[in-house]
Length: 331
Image (cartoon, rainbow, N blue to C red):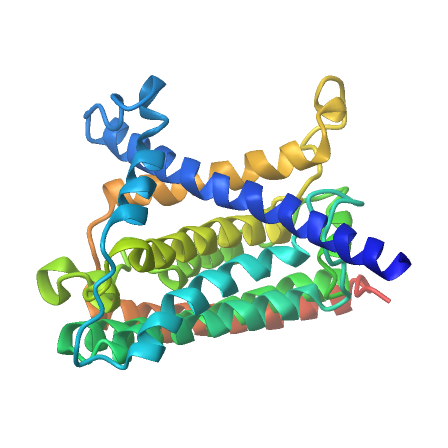
């Protein structure tokens, strides 16, 4: 009986986390479109529901009722599995994100490694979708995406080392608590900038949306997908974007910590602060899409391998040297 209670308790916690994440994905799509409209002096979604808030729901219903077409020449099993893998990996990563000191689904000591491992596996869903479609454009989009994601994961990994040197722990809650006196965005500001740009490339967001370059590859690895299977890729992509915003908030912006420890800031619940920081970073994501033109692919790879990687490696040496010289390395 006790085991059954524990089982249902875990199911409740999982649903309590996943349902808000899925609802948030729907809402940030609306926010994304509203930000683009604001920058380009358009109205954006404004008809379906108040301020167009139900537009994303209407789009989701359209995907649910649209016919799923599987190409006759495709590898049907892998074709079906690809969007499931993409969405599942995007959602399970949220298990270790701490919304407060006590509100986290899995407070594991290697939370950073877990996030890095799960986000690295995300490329498999894209490769599976592109290859299983048995079509040239999706395959080229998948290869582009794989190369892009692997390239920028290297820079992100090195950037995270800077944070770990300052904290001495792989636990995400410990990283947040280590920023009680000073958010890491101040001493590690260059790394925050590189992390943010690398997150754009990691999630295939403009100006690095080369896998989905419509003038060259139609819609990239998603070209042959329709209906709910296409929507699952879309859900996975936006869940990954939110995850990167959450990682940036936790690693550099103090996570759930209040910026000022005075009334009324210190009475706002901790999860609200993390959500506000995630929204702030996401708005920056949306603004960049509306403002910055798309890179060429050679420029994208040059930026990752010839600029970001050397800079992040040099900063690791500088950070370690500074901490050792002033005897600030964590015990």
